[in-house]
Length: 207
Image (cartoon, rainbow, N blue to C red; front, side, top):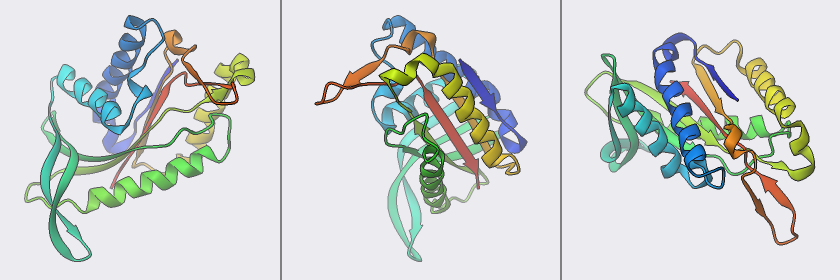
């Protein structure tokens, strides 16, 4: 199950995000559902988006040294991603959210807090060129085994709640990628309880 919501400035990114979904799905299919690109960390998640930018015809630079403003002082740091697409230039600061329950009403509040952190980091970047700044969050929500029977319903509820929360904010965009081949991707904790990670959600905000 895939879903994309892009409005305002984000409309131009829709084809890149669609490619991001295809890459996630292709990797899961190739690995027969026992591995996924979102199974790891922020760097792995971001590299999937970078791949989508290049495959769509854009150019991208990841994890590069840059000048930032922190506490009213300039300092050298690292920026997650710069890319060029259809005449526009964009800068992204991304975060990987910790595992959150897909069925939990508190998950969206946690994601929004992390998104605020990413946007705050994007504001610190110093540049002489005009570019769009974006805060971005990747999250791989989980479900415990008994809830997997109603996975599609949980995904739809999550999407609906996300839409309602951000309906009036034209700077927000988001996408979901829940490959059919990844529905059995799981890990077992020390108590032998299974937690399933059937997909990934990308949420971004122009600042």
